[in-house]
Structures are given as structure tokens and as C-alpha cells.
Amino acid sequence: MSSFLSPTQLKSLCETYLLTPSKKYGQNYLISETPINKMIEAGELTPEDTVVEIGPGFGVLTLAMAPHVQQVIAFEIEKKLEAYWEEQQRTFKNIEIVWGNALKEIGNKKLSAQGGSALGGELGSSYKVLANLPYQITSNVIRTLLELEQKPERIVIMVQKEVAERICAKPGDMSVLAISIQYYGTPNIVTKVTKGNFWPAPKVDSAVVSITNIQDRDDAETFFRYVRAGFQNKRKQLWRNLSQTLHIDGENVKRVLRDVVGDERVRAEDLSVKKWEDVIDRLERIKENT
Image (cartoon, rainbow, N blue to C red):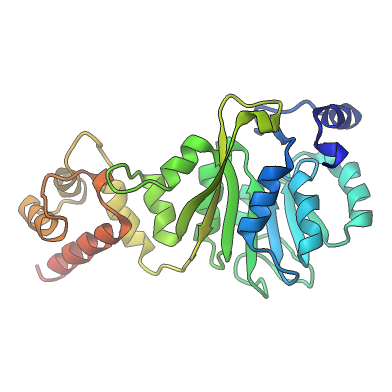
């Protein structure tokens, strides 16, 4: 194991660069190689790949990925690490650090990759995302990535175990988060990562999630208008939420749910993405014919 993975070395680096692991930024550093190896394996990295990383910290994942790919573009918000990364880049010429808030930079499509291309519609080749995400920005980062004009080929992220389970939920336990991600791609839990694999140890366990089969969607606006309406009040049955929120005749909604799902009394969490699509398609056609 590389020395910088040990708590002693991490503490020393934090002292050198005047850092205190930040709860605000969710800074819990990995001290085990096993999750890193699992992430790299799940990323199916090749020498032609461009990989985007968010929150590299001291580069436990970054430096492990760099020898396997053409380029790593890493977003880092902590400017105190500039000197550290300047030193690392002398050895790893294919690492580019983008300083600033990843959500703003990616969302505004300001990232310049080598060769003058730009993430979010002008990136010349496909790219992958591998990241140990700060917990508090997990949902926003995933949503931002999946809504980009040019989406990543695959996403491999470490998140809270509870969030990973929500992302990969099955009908009966669906949420807006699960539907939002499963609408664009296929999520799977790669491995569980206990809290003892981090320094400082967080209060909860983590998990590595891969999102593959990521695709463009032309009907996202309509789809999510229905989904948000369906989850408007979780205590109510789906037909009532859709009827009241979107001003659709309740009997029409009940009939469609009976035909598609087999039960007019279902709740929003009971429907898969495919069932949502079928219900929405039927209701949109009824609307067009009235």
C-alpha cells in the first residue's frame, strides 16, 4: 500500500497544507486500496479514456487511475492543495486540475480539456466519471452529469450506502432519486465500503455504484413533470396526485393505472421507469384526443 494512504501520512499532509478535514465538503479520505481497485475495475478503464473526477483531495483515486488512461480531469474546490497538485503533475503529465466548484463548472460547461475541447457538448470523445463524492452533493452531481448534453459513457461513484440502496431501488420502494437515475441509465452496487476504510471515519458506511447504459432522453421534461406530480404527496394514491396536481380527470387516470399496472390504488413508489413511461404515454394520448 502506498504510504499516502495511511492515516499518519494523511495527517502529515493535512498539517503541511494547513487543512482540517472538512465536514462541509465531506472530506473523508480513503485509507484502503480495495475500494479504489473495485472502482477502477468497474470503470473498465482503457488507455484511450478521458476520466472526470470530482473532489480528488490528495489523489488516492486520481493517482491510481492516471497510469491506466489518457487523461484525468479532476475538479478540486480546495485551493490550499494547489502546490500539492503542481508537484504531482510533474510526475503525472496527464492529470489536469480544474479549480472551483464542480457543480458550477460542469453545469456551466466551462471545463476545458486538453486539445481545446469542452465538456458538455464539444468534448471530442466519450468520457467516464469516477469519483468518491462528498455526500452532501451526491444527488446534485449525478443529476447534473445525466442532464448534460454530452453524457458520460459510465459513472462509477462512492456514495453513502443508504443513498446507493435508494439509487438501485426496485418497484415498491422507488423514489424521485431512483427514477431520475434509472430513467437515464442502469445503476448497480459494485461493493459495500465500511466506515473503517476512511480517515476520519464517517458516521455511516459507503458503497460504490456504477451507472451504465447511459442514454439521451428527448421526453425528459414531460416525464419528470408527471413523476414530480406523482410524488407530490406520498400518503396519497398515485391517481389522486396526478389528477389534482396536473388537473387530469381522475377516472381516466384510474383506468390507465388499471390497464398498465393492474391496480388503480398504486402509489408512486410502486412503478418502475417502464411503467411510468407507459402510464405517461397513455395519459398524453388521452389529453391529445380531448
